[in-house]
Image 1: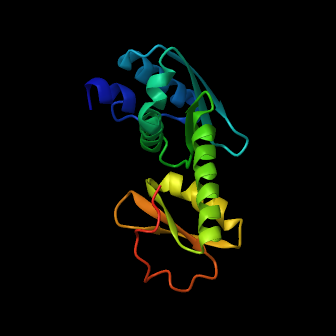
Image 2: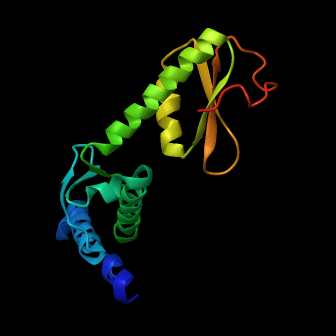
Length: 184
């Protein structure tokens, strides 16, 4: 492997934990991505006590990271994770890349929407639906709604993006209802 990917993936040679471990490797990867991408960003990398690696980015270009529902932020995180898996295959390390608390704000917005729709489902006694979401966002919603025994939720659809159906817990006709009640 040569060129851009060879430099990022190490050209086939595996990194050893003694060369700075996962944190050192993530710093190298992030430096390469920021430099080659021409971003005006700085970042901090640290390991959590449980072994996960966190990256916090800041700088003039953070708006690019947050645009389009954080797709570039997700891409950075996925890329760093894949390189770590390639370079340190014997270790299982989770990586979280964030900027200016974006992930917490996005999760809170999902919880607020789920709360609003939960109240609609309870007041009308009917199912309501949240627009199609990726798995990580659906997980946030399902976990939040699981805390309230008055409602239930499930994913509806095929593929990567699925809608979430929120319905009163006493609803036994959930499979026969049309999907036109309420979509947000």
